[in-house]
Length: 368
Image (tube, rainbow, N blue to C red; front, side, top):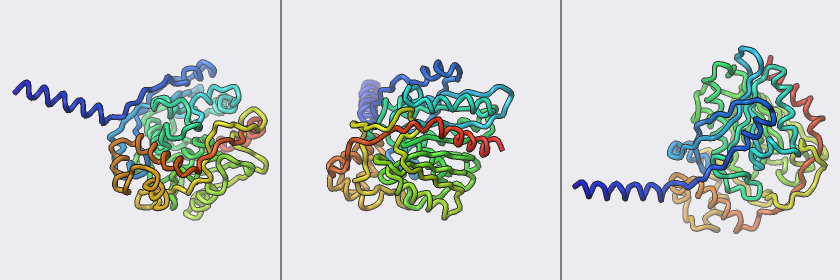
């Protein structure tokens, strides 16, 4: 009997290992960032993995826990302090330390001087990714939406933080996170319904191919200032303007700010240039999340046509068992559709001129 039990246990362990996701975490760049800034406490935040909203809605995400990295810094004094959560793009947390994106670091000192704490969030290192701009399938964007709310929950338990005065900001992928931080359906499932972000400042998000809700339901307490360059050839402004206007129609407090002649990564401290390796998706069919939690029919049909997936039910089952593989399967479908391009314009040297407006937004919405 003992021998049979041992064999059964070994089979169970073997199957568990085979079915589990193999993730090799990378070292977080936040240690380097802490040295550059000369401050900060490295912390760990419990989070989860999912390929899409269905995994969140059905609770499957709880089957794939993960721990992500963050760097928190408090101003001088006793608190409780307001806080700005700073999130990265598909460039990963390395962009927090990059010489070509000083904006990410330059904002911290004036924020601290105003009495606003900061938290830099690393969505990628724990997931084994350094960046995703050459392959967006490396880390599911929906998993990183979860990270943002898990960070908010973490902060709600920190007596040094005024949880009613927490903001969030990022560009590109980080812009998506900053938009979805104001999505009521996510908030209501992932954290307490009395938690919310006071303000959000997204920039240059990708709203056409990332599964944004076709019919968004905004958290009305979150004030949003959305900025997008009209010269964009990476993440086109139209789909995000459409989402913002739908949120406005449902009572969200949103300012849509479109800048003539501005490209992607306009806060980068260099003139616009072509980044040949970066993927763009605006030639692909739109991917939206419907009210029932599933991708729109056109997108599911594309996956069925171009991959081994034969039905929506089969895709949802894969999403539950292996969210990383499901997310990669979606990208395989897009690649076979031959709609993914490479080569976009990034930069602009607008960081220093944008900074005063940026800081004024946080002063108005986190300190008043």
